[in-house]
Image (cartoon, rainbow, N blue to C red; front, side, top):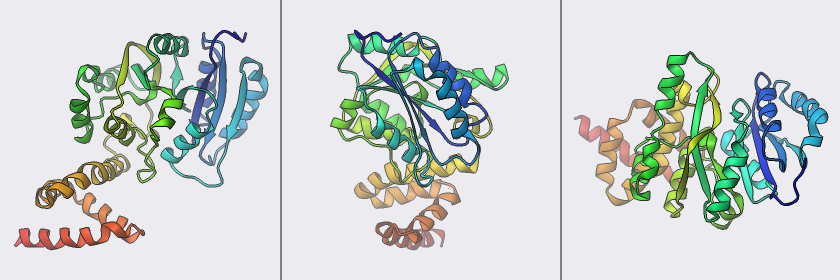
Length: 304
């Protein structure tokens, strides 16, 4: 039942080959205690039947929502491109994103709306996650990887943590004031196509955004083999994205200040990092090419 006295919130499901789990995700949105919801599904050219499942589910449940829509691009762009499309499509002030395999706890939207009503200045509100999908021991280990005490740190301390690859932020819990995000022109970094969260938080902190935190669980975070997440932290794919992050956000800044120190740090990175730099240069990122040559020359000097 729509309540005209309450603001409408957009819940956006980002999907890519999510057929196995997306119905559970949609059901968790349907059963939110908060009444006024727009449901949007932003797909990234799934090759399974994700879209068919979503369309059938919406046809059966569209009366639950103020509005429903499905966004499908012409080509696959990766997670960051998909998240940008989802942000762009949002028609409301408040936005809750959810991956097509995670679940919202029943009062997720209601609790977040209560918080932002009391804190209208908030741009990002985070909360705790409940991990599921693996065995109990592994779920608990992954839950403990999120260091919520970091939300008590200064923005400078938080930024230092993130730039060193310590992502303490449970991205799946983020509740966003999209109007304020647009005012500061914050975007997902498409240079790193499958790491949508870490660069975004770094850029937000550089823009002096304060991270708000609720000490409650609002999202169930699924662990499975196909997710690019803490469930897959040992995979080459995950480390490829982290190397790209280090390249653009840590090395690049340090190189501008102290090239020699930056290269010394690069030596400590694994060999994939050099390979990735080379690939970036040969894939039309011309601005990086001359820097790579400098690296190679200095690295050869050090090896002698």
